[in-house]
Amino acid sequence: MMGGSVRWIHLDIKMSIRVKVIFPYLILTLLVAVTGVYVVTRLVASSLGERLTNQLLESGRVVSDGLTRQEIKHVEVGRIVANTVGVSEALETEDQQKLSELVKPLAAGLDAENIILVNAAGKPLVNITRLPDGRVQDSPAQQASIPAAVLRLVSSKDPQTPPQRGIWEQQADNYYYFTVLPVTQDDRLVGAVLVGASLDTILPYLKSVALADIIVYGNNGQALGTTLRGGEQDPDKLEALSITESEYVRLAVAKDLVGGENFSVDGRWYSLARSSLRVGNDHLGVFAVVLPMDFVIQPGVASRNYYILLYAAAMIAVVAIGFLISRLIVNPLSSLVNTSQAISKGDLSLRTGIKSKDEIGWLANAFDDMTANLQERTSELERTYQILEQMDKTKTTFIQVSGHELRSPLTVVQGYAQMLREKTKEDAYLHSLSTGILDGTDRMKEILNNMLVVSRIDSDALRLAPDWTRLKDIFRRVRKTFQDGLDERKLTLETDQVDNVPMFLADPDLMYQVFYHLTMNAIKYTPDGGRIVVSGQQISQNGRKELEVIVEDNGIGIADEYKNSIFEKFFQTGEVLLHSTGKTKFKGGGPGLGLAIVRGIVEAHHGHVWVESVGHNEETFPGSKFYVRLPLDEGSGQ
Image (tube, rainbow, N blue to C red):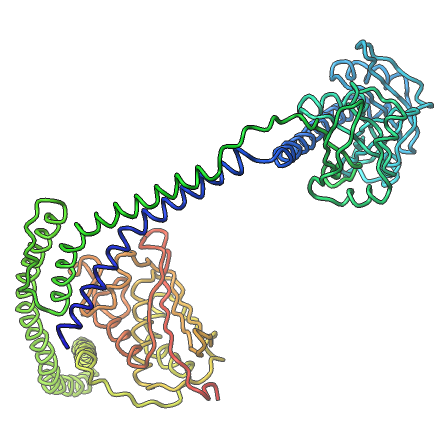
């Protein structure tokens, strides 16, 4: 039964490898075959209608781009005219002669076909027209028709009105594309300048860039102009090219080109596509691009079955070659797989036994060498681990024994020092010496207590006495402890933001140690006159409620490489021998146990602690933020 199971696994591995070898070639060949068939059937032998439609779409985009360039030219001309010195003043005083003198040279130099200036009341004052022979004439302004967009602009009285544009009939059957801009004087609208170009000029230009004939339709579907028949604007021809008003309304809201019907002009068949004519957000009308049906010469279509057979034969050949190659790869790879599985189960004595001179043989030799090195290193690590484990156990035992053994003589020293201080109240010098002894014993006792706490954390002997705890009570004790040091160094400790934090279930004495050490750490690394802010809030993290407490200072900060190390036992930043001593001295030294105790106690409460800082700098003082998160049981905050 065991042998059959092994054979089944072996067969499954070989088949899996074969599939992995053949499958990429099969997929690649299939993709090449599909691509080839697509190229043959869709690109080489695509229908005339599809290719014609693509060309119509491209021509439509070119027409839109060309009209946009014409709009840009109009805006540039209009701004030059509006900003020409003297134009706004002459427009406001209705000085037609001065306006003509100022604008006629601009019309000639800027190649503007038509420029009309109107005052703030909508009255046309100047009508400059450039003739086909290049001459510029001043037409009677009173005879110029004014588009409704111009009247809307001047009636708005808003000098910040953006440019308006449209198509209007300046004269009978003579349509212009125009852009109108405000003319201002001292932030007042004093008139408008209209820059226009006739469709007879624009349409041939659009045809030259789009390589297609153009038709432009007005608001009722009437064809206004076209380039068909050499651009001859025959009314009968325009009437025949017009569309219904309902069709115009449908096309006016179209975002893309809409295919139209095929039609015949002078015995030649054309195909067209229509779309909305827009510049910016303004709808101007509808346009159509027109191409002759014989624009594209349909190429000869290669035999589809020939290519299918060709690619099918290629696929079969690839599968066969892949199968043969897989047989040469599978056997040694199976040996590698079996060996690696045995090694993963701990048998480091097994080797592949592959001796081939190809890449798989090189891989097998490298694998065997790696296994031998791993076996040797594993033995060394096991021996080293046993030594380290014994050393750690010895260290923990030493700390526990030292802490307990030193407490008794330290208590005796502390008792005698207290008696000595009482006896020397009248001798100031001896009294100060006894007080110094007491301070030293208190500091020594605190260090011993910290060592014992660390040893309990390391040996998982830390016992919790959970009770409902109020954060503001803890920080009241912390403030009382450090008040003298805060006053001495002119440090500000702000804890108002924890007054309304809900009660939580935790060991109050251990929580006091957590925030005692965090506050002491902030005091040590914050310069004189600095600020320490404590805040707390209830948050939701992954569906559970947590209490987040932040101890923030504006001290020297912490380098990135130390953000995890500072929570290890006995870790010190910088040169330890250069540190000053004391709990509240700036950059004061210590045994390096405080933050290790913080992490141990927080994790014992199923919380976590971390620090955030942009870096260490003793000139700019970027500061640090220590975060403590503790879970809130149901009912917290009562």
